[in-house]
Amino acid sequence: MKIAMWSGPRNLSTAMMYAFGNRPDCAIWDEPFYAPYLATTGADHPMRDAILATHETDVAKVAARCAGPIPDGKKHFYMKHMPHHMLPHFPLDWAGDCVNIHLIRHPARVIASYGAKRDEMTLKDIGYPQQTALYDRIGGTVIDSADIRADPAGMLQKLCKTIGLDFDPAMLSWPAGPRKDDGIWAAHWYNAVHQSTGFAGAEGPLPDLDAAQQDLCRMAMPHYEKLAALKL
Image 1: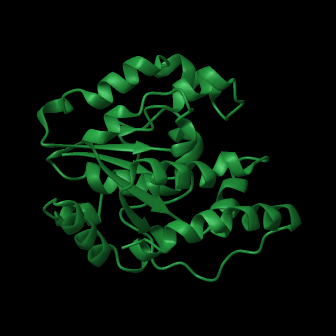
Image 2: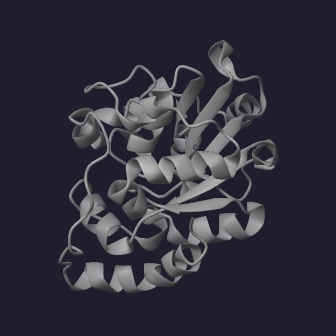
């Protein structure tokens, strides 16, 4: 089985990648289209030069690998993708052979977390419009990160049943530290998950946002609410 997990940044996406990657039957791939996105757009992101130097920038080669055999002799292939990396002319036909899952999170939490790592952000940076557009195009299963954090075992069992994958309790914990499959950007973005050995507990109240962040949250909310109405 090939699994394409789609989410914006700061959405529990790395923890989910570690959960699936801790299965002995599952290969993982961390944001395959990030380097092609940076190379094509010229966007100024943290560690841009290192990303372009380390990862494949040819979008056709990346798409071919997504469409190709599952690597490492594994039974399943989990690909962590971000909708805003998929520019309009990037190939997407490979997703037709995947189980597509859309991981969502309340915009206020995403904005607060993203803002702690990057000074500037736009609605496009956090991916909400791109994710709803992608869902409209390819469909799939929707799951909310808050529900996973509140009940990791229950929600992962439910997700696995929905997509026709046997649940493995190994998904509930992992060793602390980085993974060999991490993108090089892990040094900037993954410090919290590298300190974890499993999913964090249920989230508390929504964070306080400044005026600009509140405006951004208001723009993102209709997209979040559209997908939240469809969640498991």
